[in-house]
Length: 192
Ligand code: NI
Image 1 (tube, rainbow, N blue to C red):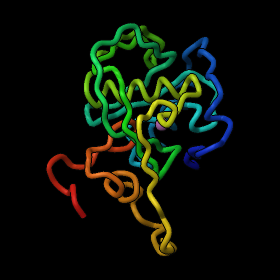
Image 2: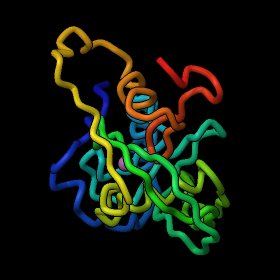
Image 3: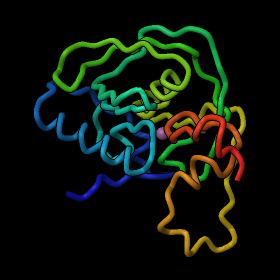
Image 4: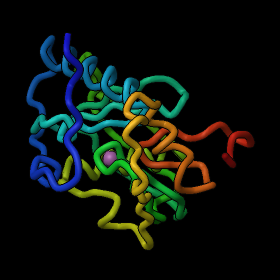
């Protein structure tokens, strides 16, 4: 089965507001599975349905603490603030310092349609906020206080088969990446 394609940059689907899912059934479960497959393949830590061209309020997140598949997620409370570097699978080569709440509580339906609450802080809180923003057509560049664009000038022709992590995870910034791109190994591999 072909992987879901991740839409990028100024693709209008990224700016659409996702519609709530009315019923969580087999089709939704299959889509969530396809989304997580696309996320893992892209070495991401989160993916929202609009990024794969789907107009539904669904996200998947895995910051290394297990996969979360969330339907109709909403932030019901938040606390504190923290600014950190963030990237997005839909905006490869771009980074931004993004202020976010430090802790959030999210209410959603799980893949079985049961109501669930997720409390996250740090990287998980950041990923949840980033992905839920996607459902409202909001990208991290809308909130970033500074943006870094990784120049790809000298013919990366031969680099097509490289792991995206090289470009997204560790190239542009020495900081651990947040948001949707996978965090680099803590305390190692920070410099090239
Ligand atoms: Ni994103």
